[in-house]
Length: 432
Image (cartoon, rainbow, N blue to C red; front, side):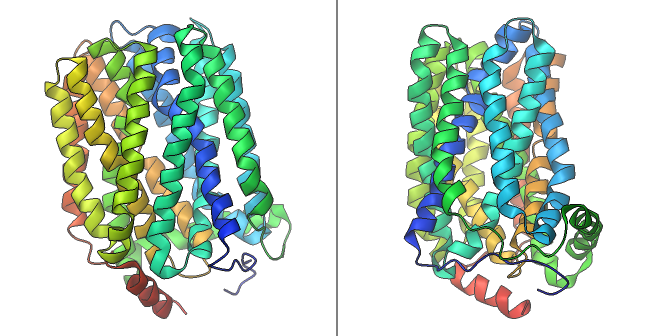
């Protein structure tokens, strides 16, 4: 690309070492996703730090997640543009990761009644975790050959679920001893240690054509130009339709993930150790589901895989409404897990087939914006319905199911998303 943009140093598609380092970062940051986003911290914050007898803890946790996603939605595209112009993609990737690791460790200082301190750490941790993921995702089209991009994406998520299992195993003894701060320190340590290969091996930008301040001005300005391109350019029609569907169904996925532990604790009486065991099962089934759908994502196309899994997610919310025992919820967890990795990996692959070559960070910034925006309304809907109905989480989870139904309907308007090798070749030809 012209106009002062930078490019990544060439990464051979066959460079196994680079791909391994990339996937290990998914292993690393899964410690945050597992312990902070999904299980221990949401239940601990809502039920112990805030108090949740009347649904107030649900509301506070939903507000924290939604606030973080609003901040991320507003900052991701300009940060992507700034990194492109300043040649600072690697620096931003590492810097945001380090801040998220620090916030995770500091969660050990959050005790009962420290509502605001726990809220601030949650917002900072989630914002920086998601920001680092923008740059991580932007490496995917560079390191994977077109015909295997779905499998590489799925491999990242599969390794990530393995990382979640390790994080749960590390947190379990602390949760069993009611020493919840140890869960967060252990998660931060895993995040830090397994990020090192990516920090060392993933390439920096090839050149640094302008100062950061200049890059910031240009990056923010071009964010609006790119937004207009996505919204108006006929060449971006399929990307526009896909991102609209992704906006809706990702909101449902994010909400189920962030409230599953709270739902299990309050409605079904799961203990903290039972919640960890439950999510360990989810990670195993997610790993298996991600692996099972990896080849079909390339051969049948990501649109097919996403559509099938959205039907499955809608069934998950219906089943959760009717579940009455812990044993029943274990079955629901298996159903949810097998669809979790598949829909996330296929969505990332879908976007990668639509991004014009040489503009990966820029467009994945908007992918991240949509993903974060698709995490604002769901948590507020769940928390608001629960609070308004005096803590009725069954009604709240059914309301989230509507996001999957609407997302599936919107996906039906997208004609792109076929076999990955063909899709990338068509995109490269359209954007020389």
